[in-house]
Image (cartoon, rainbow, N blue to C red; front, top):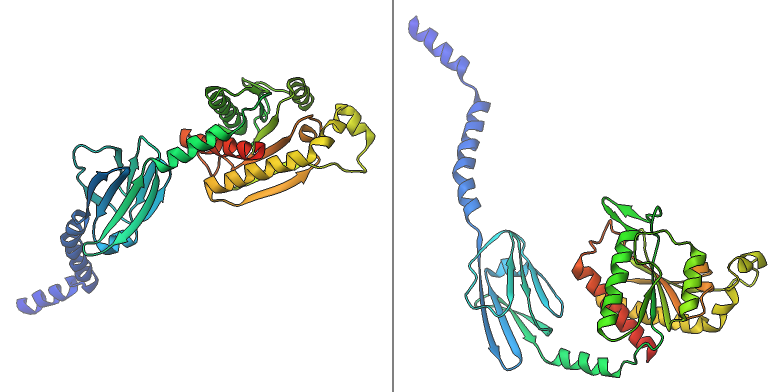
Length: 333
């Protein structure tokens, strides 16, 4: 009798769901630590011959095939598909910044990078030629005419007019920072520049127009932000049926007419430079904007990607400035 009662209690306490859960838990606990510890080993080697620096990354072939590589004249970035383990070698001639799933190589000198993916063993090979690109840039720099009357830079918005905002970032602050950086770069190159505002202050459209026409610059660029991820460039357009009152309000609308074609050429040159630098689509538009139609200089207005999608850190600002400088240089030639 007691045996029958014991058997009934065992059957009552037996739960197949609990048993399956227990088995899965044991398997998870035993397998997970092993999988968590098994990171892909990545090794780095480098060598230098003449003007070429060779950097080699070795790892599993499937791992390297899923690795995304981006390069610039001074940087190589490898975005790996998963975390990895890595021990950097000693005596590197460049800066190395490893992260959980990426590896960044920063170089002191500019160069042109060629990438090869090889097997047996699986590896990514980067050949960086250091001198050719510098010679080309120096040669191009010597050929560029100096802006005799200077470049006028208009940082959009200011003061109580924040422009487009995202979190703590605002259009008025980003454009002022970019304008100052561009002016600083031009000063180092021995070129003149003028800023419509140098601080966080509100300046009306008519005040900006009067400032530009007092300076009579070779080029006028107004900096703004778009609401999208792309670049939008505006050049002047005159509406033949526009009211006389609108022109009289600024009293300057006829001054831009003789510069319209030059303004279009300027926008096209800077648009091409931005496209080459960012590999992005550039939208070109013609609009009868007062800030453009009323200045007596070749001019354009550019909307940069929204701070919602782009971080305007030092690297981003340097890329924008580089494109502007190359675009203005191409326009002058």
